[in-house]
Amino acid sequence: MVKNQLVRALISLLILSSCGSMKETAMTITAGAIYDSTEKIKSENNLENFEKGILGTIFLMEGMTQVIPENEELLVSLVKAYSGYAFIVHETNYLEESLSKKDMGSTKKILENYTKALRHGLKFLETKKITLNDLKGNINSDKGISGLLDSKLNNKDKLQLEGVLFTAYSMASLMNYQKSTLSLMAYLPIAKGMFDWVCKISPDLGDGICDIFYGAYYSSRPSSLGGDPKLGKKHFEDLIKKSPYHWLGRVAYIQYNLMPLHNKAGYLAQRENLEKGIALNEEDLVWSPRGIKEPAVFANAQIRLYQAVGIKRFVIIKKHEKELF
Image: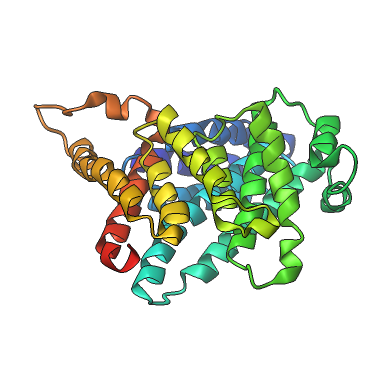
């Protein structure tokens, strides 16, 4: 992580010493490298390293937008960075605060970071000739949001799919933390429409984000607004079946489906798996000549960060389990 920060600093100095088209070219190359590195970040197993490292990267990228404001790789990287920071750091802190009934300001930080993510996401969509008004105007059209996105985007381009996915996630999260603001709820169909488009094309993009979104969406809404806890449960169970070591998926299942329903039996079944995860997570953090007891647990490096945050959230929930179930 420190090495990466030094590399970024050197790149920054190189860029600042350049001028004109050379500066733009250097930044464009750097933006591509940063976007490629966002996949590597998902393999980080230490949440403190993630929190410290992501801020430096965000500051660098924000500076770069002054020179290449419409660079798609840079904009999508910023959407992913801000939404990831809000979700992994501040939403985890919010869980602790809400269960402890202490307000330490996490909600404000969540809203601020998802707002920044959404603004960059909408700017990315504008580079593809899609405005927020276009999205609003297509909610009830014959082809809907998916039809609009099909007409403007390349559904085989991972960058574009990620741009839509994380923009949708940021918008939905802002709605989730401001449910009492009815004027904002009108935008939830836009977020869901974008999710529907991406998740139909590439359901595994984001390593579980689609299932977690739909699981939470159907579990948390009243039936009069399309909610269905059984369907929400199915999405979580599908994710766990596909990826049994996706500890964040298991914790999201507890948080959004089992906790609201006070399903103690369901919680205990997940607790057994997650308690093993605590020990395995610790083993992975500190090297031992014995190695890892169950190496298959960490075979998918792309979910390692999700595993780490899942364990942290489970520890928080477990501390309050007697009150919750």
